[in-house]
Length: 456
Image 1 (cartoon, rainbow, N blue to C red):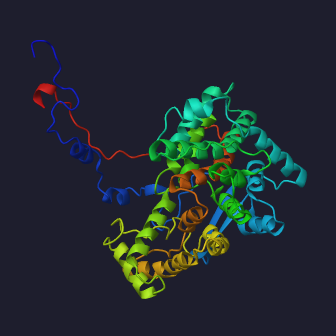
Image 2 (image 1 turned 120 degrees about the horizontal axis):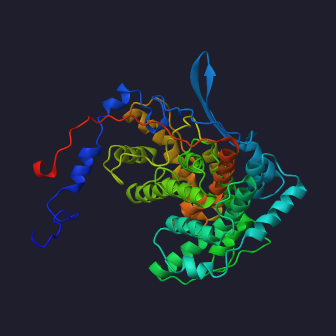
Image 3 (image 1 turned 60 degrees about the vertical axis):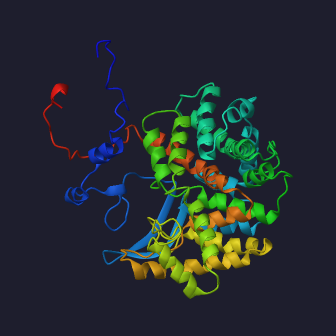
């Protein structure tokens, strides 16, 4: 044009199929992955993860080696070498809440003495505060529809309030991580309260945490308008936090923690990146899909106790004829566990009492029914290299629902627990690594000659 105005502005030609162009440019022939022995998702063909690192923090076991073959076994989870069942049984037997004790173990490598645990409680209570006017000027100033995004934004903003944010010494990282572990319940609940007030016109309640309460009780105390909760509710929430605190180095968000921290960046950036990973429906958001699926089942299955009717509807879900047409029975199956997920087993054992107290036994029985039937339906419909069982997401959403948590808080509660594991892995990476994590990608594009724009 004579006036020199550019005509190649993005979007200038409204008829261009940009989506199609991106799909065509980025599509890779699936056969190439097998040809070049690429471990998609960092997993081999039998589903086992590719060994990418070493850790002393968590261990997930789902098979044993017998005569050179991998034999599936009931899943086991270990925190710093302690079986999760022993940990849960230990604090439950003596009537203690377990999350703070678990956090101490994961961060420092040993179970605390009574004096050490008491001091750790006080340390978290002292850190359970936010900068002056943070709620007003940060959380309330930009209310969002997604609590996980609001949580991530708050974490990044806390960087600006830190007098020494970029120091990656273990001492400074521990200070920052303890501050974030203590702050996450507040950041999560307050972000939800602001969301509910601005987008649902609910009354706004901002309760300061109580210094005399631990993490689980404070979550309920700050969320409930009247600050009331039962001991059964608090203990089941505490258990859920313990079970979600760590799951080895190979889960997506913890691997993200290792990858990002290996670059030498600050702790706030690392934790924000982990939050972005956890937000995904294939990771921390899966329990919401389970709850939605069960609402659909309850609407469409007339007799919840009729196993044949339940099985028929599950087959319809699997065949993409019902629910969200994805072909997935959410909460059934896991990348590692095949026989059983110990977290799901423990949560299920404790959830029955709350279901009875909440007059939700019929719904609990439906969960038990689907758990029994779903693996059989899946085995009948599809060829599988391993068995499937209920994972922790299968029951956690139901538990949170019984506790009165809105679904917008399901994944943030997961984050309140997993921030402990992320913190431990962040420091482990810094202590042991002097290299940035940089996996290899093979290019499968062909070389091309440059074409002048006049000839394109």
